[in-house]
Length: 482
Image (cartoon, helix red, strand yellow):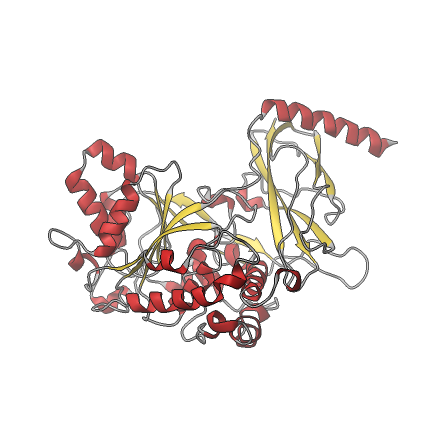
């Protein structure tokens, strides 16, 4: 009787919130625009990341693939390496289209390939330094589209610097500010001196980076970090061989063995995959690409990477999106009783904000690689999560809300596991939130007592029992008023 009354009250609360938050529900983030700058052939990880990216080209609008230099590859570029992987993609395209007709033609992707000046950093920026790559990027910047343009810098950023240099030479100050403000850069650290120049010269550009070349503290390192106290098998050489490289057609066979580190560039686009976690332009919310906060970081004590090129970076001139720490431990999955429950943290770090999702996005990659060789009925596909009610709520302290995912389905008819959890670092409220049986399809959440307005992020992860198991999410942001 009490539960029924509580749920009725919750339904009223959700209805009231739905009226107040009309139009706020965001079931999907849509397709993002993406332009990639890669120092491919510096080491195998760019090739690895490109293979993964092409498997998501049905959900991300790739607008450019430019071969660039970096501190590790200063005098040459390798666009032919990009084209080689696209040829392998073309060989498996008929199979991929059995799973989603939206995969682009290989010829269309090949037409997006170009190259930058074969010069290091700011040596390749200025009058007379335009390149096919910088011109293609400038055209993408000028293209009128209501969506942001995401630019991934897997190597150096001088192609972007040259495009912005030319933009400033040919457009008014107001137009430069408007157009550069639509750019979101995710750089895999600073692999030349162009990144700091861009951040200082173009303050409207949204820049996500662990600045400098101290890779040991970079968030993206969670991609391949071996963490004590957890199962690291999904980044093991054996897992890659069995799930990606062998028995997965010509694209899988092109995936090279790990040299320095597995797919260090991949985090730059993981957050663009529309998996239900949220909005890419909210880096502080966290997701597959890690979590970042907006502030001006302290100057680095040293830079072991860029010092090789004789480059010393100064202090940052403005706030950027940079390292944010999460405390995380994988949820427990006991043999008996409740199938999944909250685990105890095993690490607090910026890298934890990324590796916390690692098993999920690695399994997703493995499933996509299966798509290259298997018909639809023989492969796994992610669940489709249905949230009953809005995903933005405002409540008073002490009030309760009923969150339900009833109606969630799986395209393959697989059984589903639900897991609701409070993501404290994504919101302002860091205290404990009781969710009851967090593996049910619905949970009762009581807003805590607060002295000021607070936000609480409740995330639902739904995982199917297919092979490999696939996960999709929904996030509810609850604003609590005193």
